[in-house]
Image (tube, rainbow, N blue to C red; front, side):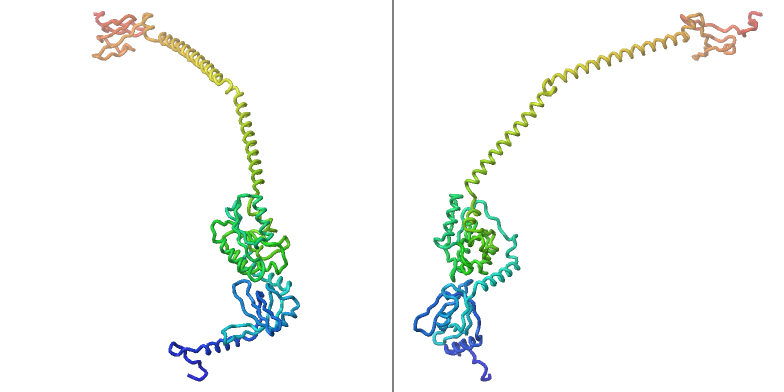
Length: 424
């Protein structure tokens, strides 16, 4: 191990306090001179002393730094320095080994002017906007009638009075959970953050109102703090920002779910007007009743029109008319069927008479006969003399019966023939 290497450190070879203090002092000295921004929370300037003591605090977090300077820096400042003033200081950190404390020895103090504050607010606004924290899609709707309204405002402030008075006049049953905090100065942001976190964790609180009266840019600076803006976006409860008056636009107005122009406007937004709602209910009831009466009247007129129609005025009339028509059709059908039967009967009789006139019975009744040759069980009509040779058994049918005979001979028409037995 070379002489430049630090000695080993262990339980058997611990460093003494002086070594640790010297090393810390050496490390801090390496930082050199720096510029630091913060908010003055305490000034200790005693007459006749050569050193002024200040406490510089980060307004976003609970951290502070002890500062020493020449009293003339405070007395000759172009802007009066007081608690709550934001400054930029230039100096060098020192570690006091005897007390084990760190202090910033300041050589220059520059109050942060309004123009510079506005420029920083604009840069932060652009940053938050680029991250999408102003996106309207992140805005949560306010409940119509919240059970409990959380209110973060100054103690006994005009903003608190305005919100409570207007809200209770509009809806007397509204309940508030009030958190009184500092609204400006070094303690404002930490207290507001704590109150916001407490109300956001309470399930009974359905909406939170940040309320403060008007003021200068420095007075409203806490509501443009980056930590507060991010806490508003991260909250799960809808938040209404009611900071200052209409022209005032701290960054909390952009990240909150609803921006109210004034604390009075915030009270009007978080609770409905009981009188207006009652009047609206009465109007809706009147409109509903009028609509119902109109509907009943229209339906009654339609029903009356239906009742005046013939089919409903005398419902059996159509049945009677149909019955008469059916009876008329039945009689007509019967008459047509009877007419058809008579016509067909007459035609059948005529045909029967024609058949009778040309039939064999009529011929027989006029003296004609039908001669059949009987051969065994068969009978053949004799149409020629050749069909009945001599000796054939014949059956002669006449009008009233039949005669059995035998053929003795045959004689052709126009010739004279003598039977053989006659010649013998």
